[in-house]
Length: 486
Image 1 (tube, one colour):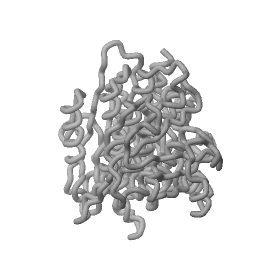
Image 2 (cartoon, helix red, strand yellow; image 1 turned 135 degrees about the vertical axis):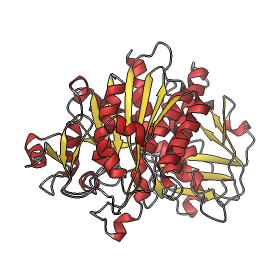
Image 3 (cartoon, rainbow, N blue to C red; image 1 turned 180 degrees about the horizontal axis):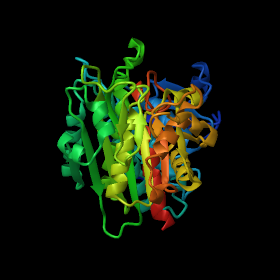
């Protein structure tokens, strides 16, 4: 999909189709040319409502008000509605609500790219997105002193961040038969080769040497051997150092604490955290953000068999803490325990963020569409919330609670891998991870549970059925904000 910015008036641009956004039911705006036809068609101009007037080659979509989040979802819904048409190019005005606010352009481009996404790798008949060219007119603001370079940058950044999100979606949507730990390592190596990143892959021999025994235990019963991936973006004169850690469970059967059959469907999505880290590293390198970023991914498959780790086992994590296993389906935190220790050993970071589809409790607590953010200090948590808001993702803080932490107490080890209560499971999982954060990173760390938005079995907003790429755009915005702060 190609984009072009122009200051030419919208009516002077040649195009198959014009996309017109109706703001706050205002059918009197000069962009709206078909008021009678729209009323006849029953178009009420509600948020994301569309109306295609084939005879006029105009597509209308409604939004409640001009904002990035509304624009993003509206154009995403609009381009989805064109999938069965033969239009190849469209034109649209910029709808900037201020001549210096280029965020609208970025959101618009993101909406087009994200809305056009379709995962059809396993279908014999492939989907075709007919729209190949999109021209955005800045005519309404030609009388102002527009900074065209900033507008072009917003377009460029929006396209890269959305394409990185779609890259992540593809990995998450790929079946466990086709995407196992060695494949994730291959994806990382190819990404590094093509994007100028450095890449280090740890295999079982190196993992044992690093004493990553909890990660190895989870992987033990699978025919697919685990991998730990370390990608690095290291620009000159970096403004900050950020470490990203992702849970990459390429499939999770629950282990010997076997999941019910219905709950095993969609467990290819348990690699969403690791996949998000891959997508973020792709975008960071292509945007050349002047922040040193390290991406660590624990790629593991949790299966059953004679060599599976068991409830009642006591495992020793990389930092020496002992963990009583009472449920082998609480495996992601075991992978992250060793991975966090390893990441902190390798990099002294200004910020440390981990991404994981860690708990169903997060989904119960905040719903399908929202990430839960936890940690010891407000600064990293607030940075995540701010990044999510700018990117159009939903995230909310869940505060740690010293009384809940007591529920992780073990009588035979330093800590238990599950709580002794069914309540507050997202928070207790975060507090379990806290045990593997060293003193230097205690105030720099935030845990992001993306179990809700990472994979949803129906379309929502700019997201399709399946993987959403949760976490990618929010972290790109966070990293960009670090540059502005400096």
